[in-house]
Image 1: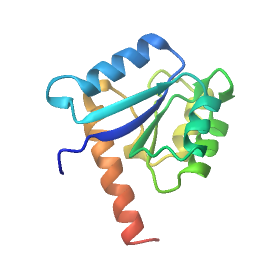
Image 2 (image 1 turned 90 degrees about the vertical axis):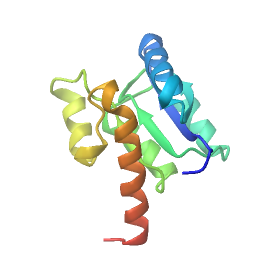
Image 3 (image 1 turned 60 degrees about the horizontal axis):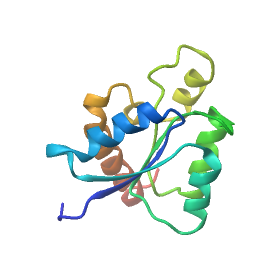
Image 4 (image 1 turned 60 degrees about the vertical axis):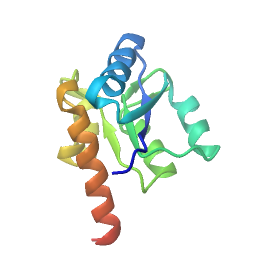
Length: 134
């Protein structure tokens, strides 16, 4: 991949989690990412509607203005060619389980250690889907 950084739109309601993810993806050897954080669905959708482009989206399904599958569907409607990775590691049943059932298994974030790998894998999978549609 060229020197361009992977553009990440991070939907995360918890500021501490957002800082953790931003720091993890932008420091040291993982400095392959530019991360823009939004803390609610509306702000992120406004950015997508304004034509801002991202390579991947990280989505907390528990946003203050949208919950679960509704968040996932709203984001996917606006950017069908961009992988959306639901971050459901803290979910035990409920909406997290439903969101997980809507996303490919390799696209679920479970541990920040694996997040760079999960992003790269989701990008490669989405690229192959576009070349070889089902």
